[in-house]
Amino acid sequence: MEVVVSGIRPTGSLHLGNYFGAMRNFVKMQHQDNCYFFIADYHSLTTHPTPGDLHGNVKRVLVDYLAAGLDPEKVTLYLQSDLPETAELYLFLNMNAYLGELERCTSFKDKARTQPENVNAGLLTYPTLMAADIILHRANKVPVGKDQEQHLEMTRTFANRFNRMYKVDYFPEPVAYNFGEELVKIPGLDGSMKMGKSEGEGNAIFLSDTPEAIKKKVMKAVTDSGPTEPNSTKPQAIENLFTLMKVVSATETVAHFEELYNTCQIRYGDLKKQLTQDMIAFTEPFREKIADLSANEEYLRKVVNMGAEKAHESAAKTIRDVRDIIGFRKF
Image (cartoon, rainbow, N blue to C red; front, side, top):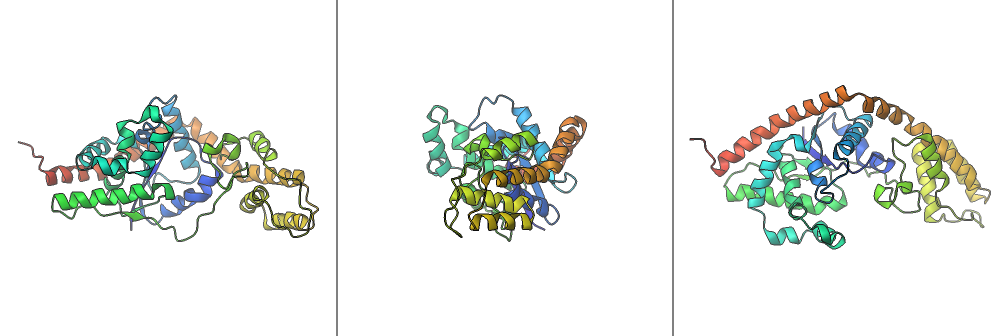
């Protein structure tokens, strides 16, 4: 059984892109691996140091992930800020991280360029905090996207450096988790290749969206004037609509609209109405769970307290070992 760690930034609700990307695989992983999933509320301060409603954002993400299938009895689901050991290991790792390597980090350079008024120390040391999150539980594997691959490589560097400096073989060098299958890539409603909140609220369908919101978004989706020749190649925006239909609609429904497109008889209004109907049906179970969980404060409190207790058990042992390895002793 592998030890797997993954962080979840409290920056927005789950949308179909998240769900068909990593989320479904997280649900599978919880049955076969020792999984630690944490809501990265410390991390969020690197770009939003004065959040308007941090607690509300954390609650929304917690509820969404529970509704999407994470079982707190099977995984360790906790808040990053509930684990003081994270901050302590972050401190130790910062002592052995070099300014040059942190400044060369691609994400730091990008953020420093786009938010020059907020180039804080937390942004610079983001890789060491991420490393602390991972090796605190001595993880073997980490599910990461392309944008996090450099950070994972730095985590390996920090783990290896600790082992080398203190002449121990303590921290594993975690590797990227290979889900064993290609992730489904969900496109946006605005014609872009990727569904995501950063592209604009109207680009994404969230699991918590009301039927009215879904209808409004789908009906505004980008289209063109329609094909003029049989069996013509679909423009990207139209291909996106068919891709979305393939993940929420019946096979025969997709085939019906493919035939209409290939024979130049398609009416995008009809396709959007069908897609809206199927989107609403697909998200309905999630919407109901989200509503129930959001109203159950006692259960949510139980989940985060249980998660903190389980995470602390693992983290406390690591910190005890690290303190002993470095040389901290009680008189």
